[in-house]
Length: 259
Image (cartoon, one colour):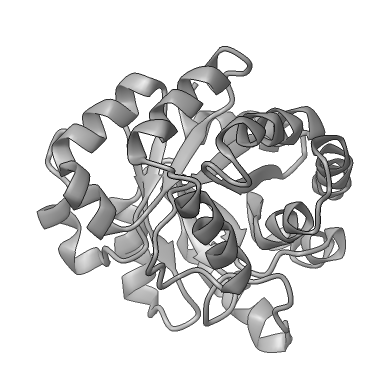
């Protein structure tokens, strides 16, 4: 099922979609699959899989630490395609890759897109490719992958509208300025930013990410999005040694907040 359609099915049931971010190959290649299955069992509607990179400009210290561990354990881009194929045998929920331009170019951009599509991935987020470089970086034929762009609190109304036109699947709304992290501070300006962005997104669904670290965050912003992305909080728990069963239980709490 296409990503947008999948979110729409959840929304028509009067719920918000839940995407869970995991770093590929973290804490090791075998354990990653266990955590991915636990996320699905916990109620994730979308699995967002981060491609480890040594210089991730959008990621905070928690996700950076998970990427560093995966790279030290010899993660390669080819591994991610094997992961997705394995996950595809377990579930058909959309799988979205999130990575940076440098590793993708090193692997071979077109080869990466082809291998991603063939493995069963549904979408791609490349946060260091801005709107202005979109047409240059992505070929006209994207091999069926939805390319998801990001808005930030600094995005103008016109830019948000243009990002909505170019995106497919959903628009990734960054809640607060800065990198990913579980301890972001929300204030009244955050609510105003989310309300404004949500009112301008008309073509796509909108998912809120960065700083969604507890179910209360979802309840607070419930009316201003079609879904939420949880990442650093889950990665932090894995870093602390929480096993897949515990991660599944934690995700159920976020799932309940989306219902």
